Length: 124
Image (cartoon, rainbow, N blue to C red):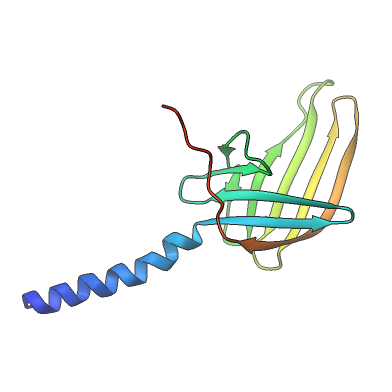
């Protein structure tokens, strides 16, 4: 391979890599009856946050078909169970929370991808 061929190959590789990187960062706008939530998602970093993004936390699990933002099973009587999950193919959103002395939430809705609005800047 000549130098010109290697430069062309590097340029093509750069253009091919860019969209995949952008697809790793996005917002999800999820809507169910009387509620809309916005999640900021960075698959490359394995992190997400909700709404005003007051706290960035690790994503529980990512597969080719689902993004499980949060999955917490009840371990003690005072604990609660939480599942926030999005089907990557259909956009179906599941948001379930119960236990721990509160009434609970059981939502099914849909999510749409939106431009990544970023995470808050860190001080250190």
